[in-house]
Length: 522
Image 1 (cartoon, rainbow, N blue to C red):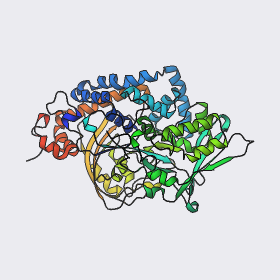
Image 2: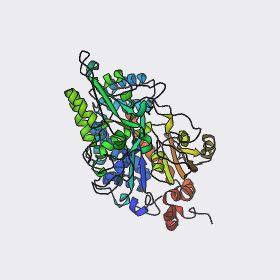
Image 3: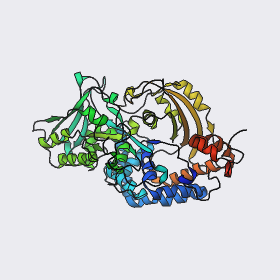
């Protein structure tokens, strides 16, 4: 709500002043990196807030068209690669949504690695260069000193019973299978270990390049028993298999390279890791690896234990050396640097809630682009996550309410009245869940913590990437804005939504603009 401001800004409204941390995964990491580091993107959002009725055109010109112009994908190429994308989806047993097929099509049509895809996205929409570090200048005073936690998932295949015993991750594969290099974890006593470990980079926005990460990379309890990584590969069917191994990988993950000089890590690579939504391809075997080789692309970002911001660059160099000149020495170098895959945070928690709570938050504002009930997997008795290899040990995060009680609470969330003519926004609701944490070693959580979850749920008939009709997302953004500023929704915005975001700050400022008579009951 603009509160009689013709040109609202994040600073003048104080909208985000009381937030101490922002936990993001996947597409929200795209969004937040632009918001935190791009003054142009921040200005675009402020212009949209000042003119909701014109927000579709503003967003189209200020974001969507910039991205399309940078990629230059023409229709002929797009149609051909759509067939390839659907074939890959079929191989994955339809685990991709329809919209995911379009983002995969778009990716394939550009001949990019996932890293390069994110480079182009951030540079075109936010003028963020692919080498810009996390310590880069921020977009405004609103962000100074706040913690950003871009969550992702470390790929750690090992002995997980019963159906993935001996599973390996493919680091790379050449045409016709060879050369190739795989890796897997080594554990004490050959104990079982999950294929995925929740992980998160973190930075204090505006801090110096050499400042330490404010939050752990992985919970030390999540990597207990993990001794190292083992690598194996071969140059051809007629040459012996080459093997090598790391040591002390647990400490590297929990308090190593990513904790020191966190500000030197590149923004684009951190976002790439957080959003690599088809990164599970590393575990899907030779056929999928062969498809990547034929397309000269890679959907899995890799990271190493190299310190001082060189974790991604060193991994890229070592993997490139393996590809161009496979040798026992190259495999040993990869092992020494503990190179491993880092993929979308959706493979561990698709909401960002768990990392926020693990970072110490006892009050969380959750913004999700789906029905609020889709958070139920985090709660005791919640549904299993239908994503390959996601370990059930990641959940629950909350011992109460249980999933059944949660459904009743969410059913009582307050709905906004949608504006007439909304094509894509199907529901916008807001409500609060009072939760209690469960003990969970994967996230480093202790039991019994009280956590208040404020949930804003925007459901639409669009998903993460229907790229043949990107203007639909421009329209959706406008529908959400027009719904929020509609006069009939003023009581809900003023009495519920804004107090959730601004707390006592809002209460002190309330009384102007559209919130007159709506802010608080007597």
